[in-house]
Image (cartoon, rainbow, N blue to C red):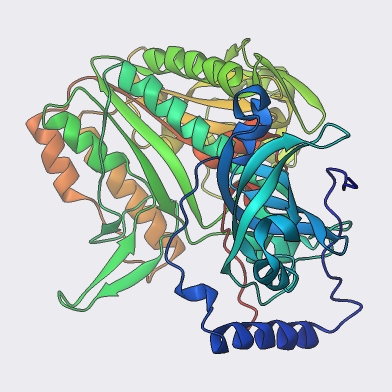
Length: 502
């Protein structure tokens, strides 16, 4: 018996035949099926008893067993009264052998009109061909859905990056490695949830629509609620609602939350993205450090099979974490924060080193600018940077022995910030003052802003927030790292795209 190898052949090449011609021919086939009372779109179900990966992974169990599989035709090779095809289901490709003597003359005649991309159901017994390829010998075959558009030419695949993101449904069909990325994304989320649940955290949901714009630096998306006749905003964080729950008596909470920021786009940023924020009463930022190291080391081993992973050609040891204070600025920039007696001294140093800072920048603001300019690019291996200036840490508790700094850390991998953690500020008076400064700064930048202090959150703090450690990190960047994906768009099923009408 002749057979096809396990590399699918190219589908129709739309370059050789116009797309409109292909669509016209396929619609004619569909019309003929409907006229004959065999409209595939009236089929409501097909009983699947096996998947490609199951059969291919355990042939001894499945040999000579009758199975029913369903999926998309990815290739076919006709040989008169018999044909080979490759069927793609949710788990992979498997070869099928279809012969007129087995399925019947009428069914085979209909099968001959099937196109690449059609979705079919097929029943038959599992066997190996002469060259040892595990296959299904069809005994019945039926059309479940008609494909009216051709798949991209297989040898070249779907290469246009923009088109891949816009038509992810096609990308998933013709590029199997893309599907694997999103299978891993699901596994990463599953492992994180299992880890946190195992430590006694409770998963919760908080509002996506908020009643006003807070003073934080991120720019929100604005909408309007018709019934209440009030403007509302898509959330830029989940933090303040989650800490309200700690006030309410929960000790450990977390949320896998969709976040929205009306800001720029690049390989590391998308206007909507996913974070996990978690809060634990009676611990501090050092407790969060331990959690970060343990969680990320576990994820590398579970998802990648090793603590040492490769990202875009660089080896990264996820089992080894360096910890540095903001003194890292002295190490990499050669400037000494302690030598700045005044804010003017700090601004003068920034000017000398050609580091751009606002005209009213404080010592802490200048220190943060030096960090961005000189330090971050060196943090390739996992590194925790802790003790940040109070000026850019409005929700973190001050260090008791040095109130110009806070008990805050960020962690970096491959010169990219991955997460942010605090000993949470629980002094309502200090918090209100910092919020007011945030709002004032935002109004100075944009006189039309509607940002204001979240008075209800201050009210919650006045009831008493226990000493609390909090952590937030982006899921998308983490998935990029653990799947070796170069762009955030590669790990979002449907990334934000500019409208083609623009």
